[in-house]
Structures are given as C-alpha cells and as structure tokens.
Length: 96
Image 1 (cartoon, rainbow, N blue to C red):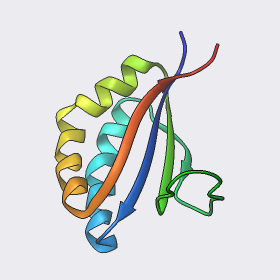
Image 2 (cartoon, one colour):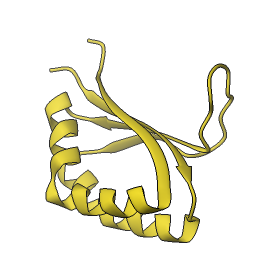
Image 3 (cartoon, rainbow, N blue to C red):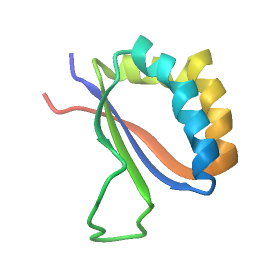
C-alpha cells in the first residue's frame, strides 16, 4: 500500500492564533499516524509564488491522509486555520 502525503503551503497572518490550530490538529495527526517530514523551516523558492510556511506530512496510506483531513478533530482545527492563514493543501500518493 502506497503512503499518502499532505503537502501544505501556508501564509500565516496571526502566528499566535496559528498555535491554536497546531494544538487543535494534533489529536487528528496522532490518530491517523502522521509523520511530519517538513514543518516550516528554511526553504529555497525556485519557481512560482512562495508561501512562508511549507509542510509535508506522511501518512500510512492515502486513505489515512483523507480520513485525517475529514475527521471531526481536524475539521475543528481547519476552522481555526482558515481564520488566521491562507493555504493551499493537497494529498498525493507516494511512489511505490
């Protein structure tokens, strides 16, 4: 079974309130086996419009990634995130 990956590109407008998003999302990430591969940090913008925060999260499968996103736990966090940040998010299936 191929792993699933969340790829998120985020511009945070309110860093203090964004911490509430992170803490509210944590139970969903734990429940669905999330493994953070990149979480913010330095980056090199090569093409296109860059965002200030870039995140890659590995899940055991695409279904785990989808279930995490659609879970009540994450939906509560998503409401916070949408009020304090602009984001582009997608789920991709891993190779192999």
